[in-house]
Image (tube, rainbow, N blue to C red; front, top):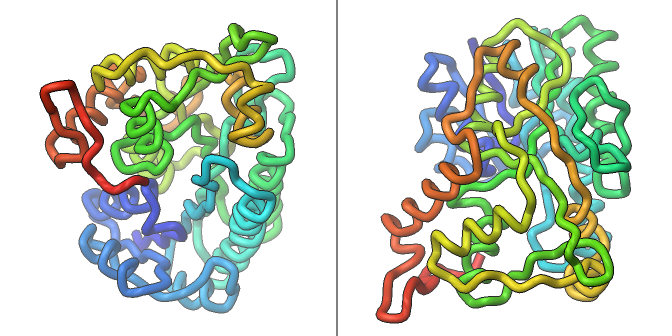
Length: 330
């Protein structure tokens, strides 16, 4: 098949391009500059210039595609993201979905795979949920749910198959947030943010290594199943447990606790909400539909891989006093 990937130069998209090429598909990656062209070519894909906000360029770049994938996002990476940062991500989700749907119709594609986030369906009481539960979006996740519905309506109107893949909390050696965690844990600057007066109440989150997320997207490209699926590992865990395990592998001091009401002053309300509201979910439906299973079934194996790759690439270096961060700040 020919597979078109919007978001081909991101941490998920780069892996997806390589994965689909390895499966024998022709892969076209939407790019905006020479650096993006190089990233796609290095992974065996064909770069085609365009902009996810420019419908005509998306349609032209997707010409010949059997399957389209919308993996483009603009998740803010600043410590305290502004409204403008979130608004750009909203545009990528909504306008990107509209333009991918238009392209799928124009090129007569068979299938469209849309990236979303499990946060859209987290329950107000923090209880476990799955794909059948009612969504409860907030300011940050409403656009993800809107994009899901745009794609689903497009599939009904134009006759192509749609797949919605809701990802958990992405982490990997090359994600900006994972690198921020690592550098700041080594410097003793990244706290455990909890709810309650003293920050002692921990949220349970659903994580997934980006390698496993990309394999799920590749499986959805090739598979026949349609609908909505949660892309997470096997073991939802608390943010406190994740950060302590990360600090332990880095031989850093245990992170201190900060209550959410105080952390909002430094991180903003949206970021604190993500860290302090539970969203435990399951990958059972994804496993059954696409014969997928995570190579990193829990955060333990995933964090081992992150730290090992950082050692190999000299992102961190052992000194007489332990590891130090040697890469440029993310």
